[in-house]
Amino acid sequence: MNTFQRLSHLQMYLLLRSKNVKASNVIHRAYLASHGYHTTRTASSNLAIAYKQENDQYSDEDIHEEETRKPARPISRFDKPLGQLKDFHPNPEKLTRKPAAPISRFDKQPPGQFMDLYSNPDKVRLPRKAFAGSKTMPFIMHVKSDIRVLLEQNAPYLDWRPYHAAAEVFAPRQNNYVLNNHINWNNLPYDPYFKLTFPQPEMLRPEMLHLLLDKKMSRMEKQVAVKAYQEGLNAHPAGQQTMNVPMMDGRKLEGIQHKYRETMLFFPAEAQICHTNCSYCFRWPQFTSVGGPDRFSSQQASDLLEYIKRHKDITDLLITGGDAMVAKAEALSKYIDPLLNNPETEHLQTIRFGTKSLAFWPYKFTEDDDAVPMLELFKKIKASRKCVSIQAHFTHPIELKTKVVQEAIANIQATGAIIRTQSPIVRGINDSTECWTEMLNLQTRLGLAPYYMFMERDTGAKEYFQVPIQRALDIFHKTVKAVPGTAKTIRGPVMSAGPGKIHILGTSEVGSEKEKVFVLRFVQARNPDWCDADKVFYAEYDPEACWLSDLKPASGEKEWFWEAEYREMEKNNDGGSSGQRLQSQK
Image (tube, rainbow, N blue to C red):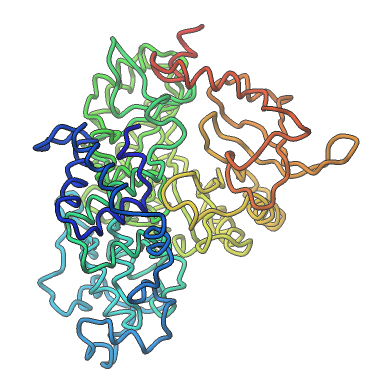
């Protein structure tokens, strides 16, 4: 790690705020050079100058003063009571007019009426060719530049600026179906689906929010700061880039992950976006510049086929993204058809599709131009004697209540496909027994199979969304007691961490001193032997712990049984993925 990369976010902020133009320019060059971009100076020279400027210009007293400085103006909706935001609005008259009729899930509105909320209809983004829309509902995408209009029209008492600042770091996308059906616009900013689809100011650390709201900062300075901030958010957790990418014929297979022996992931280039972005998404780098050349994406159908042919232990292929259902059926067929009715891929049993399209754009399976081709693709896979599993991401009960989503579910089930559901437990969105009980009851009534309750992963704005393990356990066990046996197929809470999927079974007391502990075991692991039924392991009880890294071995143990082997895997990871190496050792 070089000198520049060791700078804290606060130090970077101070350097960028410098009145010394030369110093500010040096920081730009140093940052770009440290990330491989061409500059007029050498990288080493830039870094040396940047370090010198940092030490010469700022003392400890300066940093302390900057840290404790009172913001010049409010940075979030909580800073001033309602009615005082007028001073900070570019057009105060707009706050005194009667707001446009809110769009909520309780309103009966003809399709597409959300377009009428624009003060300037010319600004409405027309659907892309990939999202042709349905016969009754055109697909309209809203992005960062639309946040101001959406909030001014529907929640004029909110300052749109902090939300726009959060969107600089976490790329937002919302479509008209979600905005019309899932958000209660009368309950902003507290509505759970508003939090799910709009980046929240509190997702940013205070110093970063200050920076992005500072009018003195240039656009270039903000872009540099955003890039640095994103790189500090653990963009690719759990060894996705270092331990999951397999090798074939001496080269890395871009767009493929093979973490577990039986399951491989494929990221088609045509499925690199979503119909709407979740603010808590652990794949957020796929949608931002920080993903860049390291984004998981492939167009090589031949690589997919050849890799599966060579690895006979692979039984499950998960096609994901982004969202697998953003891709057209024709594009997916290019990858899937060679795998069907092929004696060399007979060992492949299940083709899964990771998607949230049922929640975000169910027209994909009803009236969309691609609905019939996609359903026919499912039938074709099923006819080849392979299972089709839709890994449907449902986060909140409201997603299951519209007529169109229920029609979409029925259409998919008619092809013979199975729909399994999963979701993380997310603070402020679905962290209640009532929410999970209602959601599981709706799912089983519609014939869906509850699969996983995940813990929020250690990436992105995890501090804002994460729920303590003990609270997740309480919610899970109370929910399981309240639902019928058909819903008890769900497993949770589960941490999808570096060594594998770790199921938190509950708490217990062990030893002569009755030490309270968390009881853990693997559901899936980089080494399948770790999943043996007798290999339960214990962690010290910590009511504030939210992730594996917050836990310590119980009873004074130095480490858990799997840690030494996992360290060796991390150290010797230049020969392909863990799933691949397991097969090569057979």
